[in-house]
Length: 376
Image (cartoon, rainbow, N blue to C red; front, side):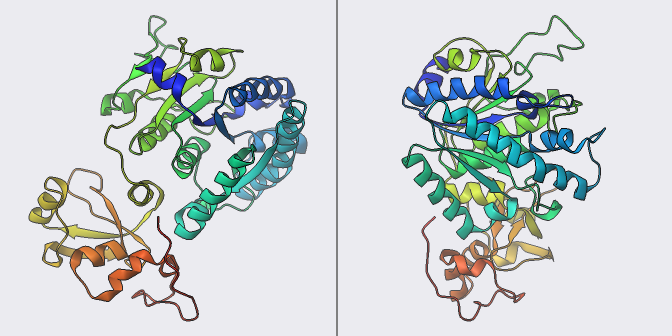
């Protein structure tokens, strides 16, 4: 199963970790970028479609600005990102140009992905680039992002991109070999797990936290990314990107890394967007009967099952429906809630992207904006 999946995956998102392309001492690592470009260009020549999510801008900028330590304040981080991103992209441009491969820079924030119209527009743009044979190189727009609109880390961004482009496989290249039975730094006898059919709580607890200068994530963020995309039918391969030739070797069916299988029953794109891209702004407290109906019987939510409403509940905003001792059983937009509750014609706004940005607390349609439904 593992070998067949890796050999047959056509559209692949490859996340490249900071430590692979930049370092604290030297800044950018052009020899590493060249090697990765060689391997990725070879995959593309074999008929695969590749998108890259690359870290490394801030670390590259730190070296260029002569900073002695990783910046703690947001303005200095953003300054480093501004300096480093242009250098990083130019390095990719030069490296792929010698292979006659075109690349394009795409910078995203969470706000771009959480707005349904912009999400769909980004999907169309990336599809067009792929159609032209261009490799999109994607990073978070760290120069302008603040906490409210940040994705947070590029493992999560790569997962968002995998959903955005309907990828078949997410590959996370880092300086680690994959998931082990135990922490190999503490137990040399720990063994690599080549195939993970399901991400259990035990596996999530086993994930550690990165303590490197270059990395902002760690195994924990990689596991969360794998879990997120698995719900959309996308498998995830965590692989050591420092070993030359390992990437094409594994994709040809060879050993290496840890493969996390996808769920057999996947969410639709819109449901996945609601569940994993939107951030809840409101909370609906439900009675036990409503929880039972939603969680176990797949029924709709009735107004009589809502005990309390808190936070911001409005058109286009995501609401969380928690239950004691568990995370939110699901997230729903205001429009979907109105539809399930059987409320008046305002439920039709679920099909109207313009309704995601009204100013009114009750979600009235913004004046002067056309109703132009987009099918998700």
